[in-house]
Image (cartoon, rainbow, N blue to C red; front, side):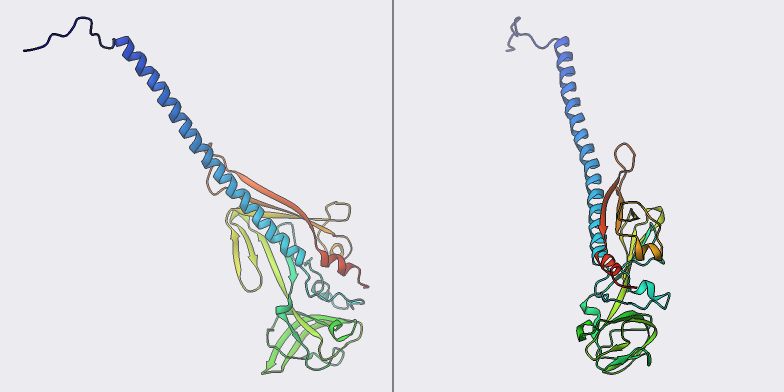
Length: 287
């Protein structure tokens, strides 16, 4: 037997259904808009953060090398600058090839040093007796007599290394300061050239330490300004390296790996001024 539906039992009217539908749509639309806005904000923030971190990381890496440029280059008086090439040997900063987009530094450490096993007279010949075969043709070297009690030094390039211990290193070029005599026990150190190059078209900063060349990071570039003691920009030259430049202003740029939501490209930058301490100390030597 079918039950009768009470006449006072009413459902939703069409207007009530429409109002409910509109209210629900507004709620869903607002929630969706909030969700997509959050996703877009996160997308842009992640791209910007990664670019900022890349710029700062590369800046600190380059600043570290700039501050340490010139390690193991003898800090002695009276360098004899008879050879034009020798100008660059004893300076942390290479004037010949350094530009606003190309930075070349001299670097060394105790791991690249060896010891003379016999007295060497720079005025008598080019053969130096050493106890290690770490050198090869074309290497830039310095010989430092300070460890043996002498205020003298020599810089030059290696022509060849022969022997099986002790070894004979033959110099291709050399220039020395003070006395030409370097006693047994003097240090001979290899001077490496570190190169940072800012490649065009944002292909990435290139780094070469003489052994391995690599792109530091994609979508990066840098610029260098050479400053005098007043902070004014000066041109790169042998004369300014010797007499004028005190500080490098380094700016590293990094582009985001992807476009932002609005289609634009985010470019981060990090800037720092840094003094080359060994450049300043070499300036106080007597020329």
